[in-house]
Length: 131
Image (cartoon, rainbow, N blue to C red; front, side, top):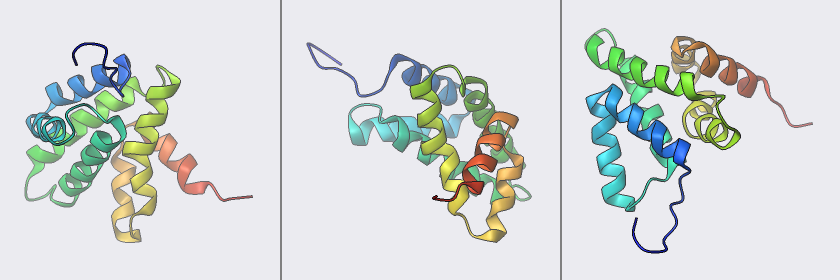
């Protein structure tokens, strides 16, 4: 960004986006496409794209185990960063984890393959009911 423009993404969100992109070539492609389309990092949208990719990699895991391994590496990055600050935690929860709660039953098993902190967040979100 130049001049007095302020980035929508926090420094920690930008750092995690870079770390995810470094963890897997497809995550880097997703980030490049995201930045080209949006001209800046919009964390929840990028994290959602990572979640959609993770789900597709899970669906294709038998045919393309390397893709699922790469998606798992990205999920591990997000898992390691999940509780580091409140804004980052919210972005990962809403952008990446929450989509798993809306999946049809046959795809929900993908959530069981998430790393521990993300899986715990999924469990909490899936159990939530309005009061």
